Image 1: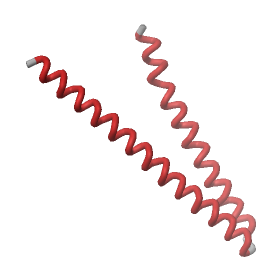
Image 2 (image 1 turned 90 degrees about the vertical axis):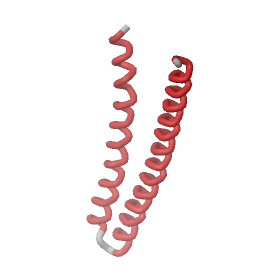
Image 3 (image 1 turned 45 degrees about the vertical axis):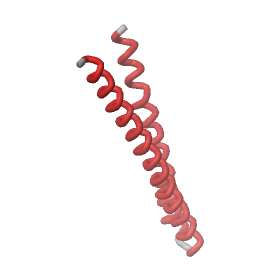
Image 4 (image 1 turned 180 degrees about the horizontal axis):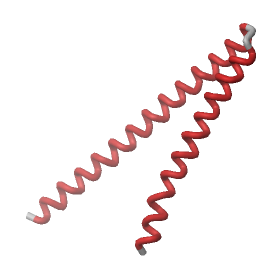
Length: 87
C-alpha cells in the first residue's frame, strides 16, 4: 500500500514539475513577443514623428522587462533563504 502511494506521489510531482516548466516556457515566449511588439511600436512612433511618445513607450517596455526580471530573480532566492533558516 505504501509503495503504491509513493509511486503515485512521484508521478504527481513529476506532472507538477513538467507543468511548471511548460508554463515558464510559455511565459518567456509571450513576454518576448510583447517586448518586441512594444519596442517596434516605439520605433515606429518615433519614426513617424512623435519622438517623445516613442521614447516613453520604449522606456516603459524596457522598464517593465527589467522589473519582471528583478522580481523573478528575487522570488527564486526566497526559497533558498527559507531552507537555510530551517537548518
